[in-house]
Length: 599
Image 1 (tube, rainbow, N blue to C red):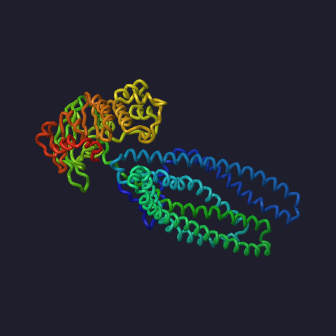
Image 2: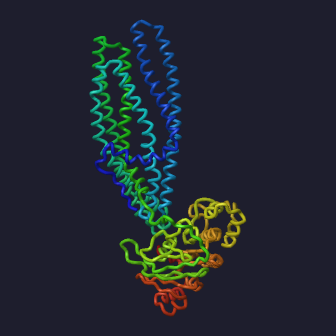
Image 3: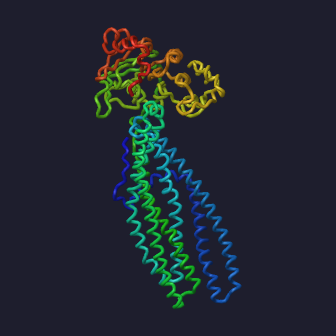
């Protein structure tokens, strides 16, 4: 996936609709609320029109000497004000409810899309940039598709009625006022392209800024260890300055636009006052009519400026809409084929048949890889960094497609089965446990919804995790923090194994599951792993000598596209690279404990 969010330079007003139209699907479920909102708008506009007219009437009545009628007019005015305020209150509440519902749907829909695309397709985007699309960009688009839908109706209705009232009071004076309207259109056209470009650049650099901040917060320990605080702060300031520059420019354009618009409004009002005085002298209308005319014309600036602002902000929001649309346009690297059937695992045998794979523009990781892992046996996968060990497990779960060859499970090509059923048959235990900022119970139920407490306890006991869980103040209901930050490394890994026991799938992948453990924690985890591997087909990525000895087969990825397959003893006798790896571990105390698998 590429972050291609540039908006066409010559996008016209008509071009706004195709960009924002796809987002209306998030509004449709609340179409009834939108209609109620429109009803409150009609009432508010009608009462506003009546209020402005009623304000001018006392002046005419006073001019005519009808003093008693002034009080009845003011009473009617007060009643209309009450109805007006109630309608505006109701409209405001409905607009808030509608807006927050649309935001919730948009954010959830975008997150679902990100989850559907999965990690290979999302790797080019930093997490901070994705978070910016989920928050800042969504809010910007919501302002267009919700607020604009509401305000366009309000502004158009207000303009139509107010212009009609202007011509009803005095057509000649209204015609002169309307002659100035094209100036406002030209004014808006001058500012819109500049607003669009400034907003586009701000969203681009703001995404980079959030990504940088997210990475810095995630690496606080490393920053401290290497005394890199000053350097990181300088880099942050550099990225921040670019975002600040374009945000300042964006806001300054708003200020210039608003001030020049106000100047045009005042100029129009001055012209109308001069012409209105002439109309009173010619006795075409009374003082009260001129007051109402001036109020209609003055309040007409609200919808006219509002419509201009809507299009102005819509151009500014194009970059946000395009960034979200870029996620929708992205496609996952793999998907379920048409006619695929659910995978039925009977034995759990895994076979790699003439498998070849290379990342785009990169050398082959392996060519013609042939290997069969019998049901219930273990295949250890080893090799130098960058040889493609973790990639092989990603091919097994179809996050990538092979360039050639195929992978079979019980003789069935995994491309001919549904993705859901394939991934439901494979459990991956990695050195980065899948733990959310929730309770231990919730994290266990994430992999097997509906499991009862006895099942959770049994899985934890099998993973040698129950003793430390039972010792916690709240037991299974203890909150572990994001990524299990409240637990030790060994506790997190045992909890990850408890999830695997609970899932109970016929095929198991262990991706450096003990790489980051100390010797004591490793011993407990290894006991749990031995129990977990029993009667399961296992693919084990490991560097530790003790882990390799227990595997029936060892697959050594040479790093040049070739592979070597044999038992531990066979490779120990015949493969120089394997010999060196084992010798290194057996001669250097603690070697290999921190080595991690290639991704």
